[in-house]
Length: 135
Image (cartoon, rainbow, N blue to C red; front, side, top):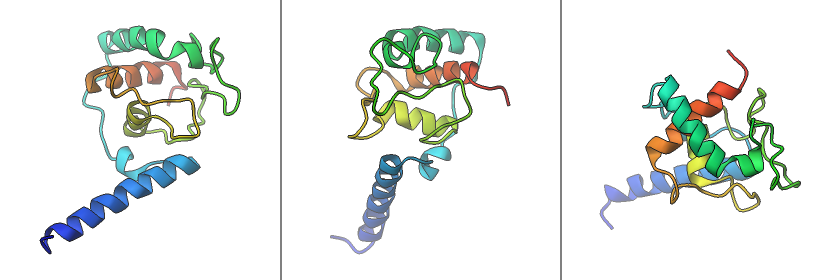
């Protein structure tokens, strides 16, 4: 392997490993936190996100995001999306990463990357933001 490629490969591998460890233990994801939401929060984005949420997320997180959906697992329960507690990080980038990649092997929160486009996921992030506490 080329000597210039090896440090880049090793760095990327370490970043991916660190993200997995952080997600498995809970807490934020610094790499994901650095990603900025490219979709402005607008009435249209929030409405589009709400439709996607109602189709893909409400079964566990509940119609109002309280974590009380009819198919909600009990251990661990789904997050209440209306409060200030964000186990996997609270930035838009971290929420996007969690929706796209899932919460890890010990969680029922599976990756949505094969069901939703990046734009769709950002719209869901904007909708979730509309549910939570106002900053």
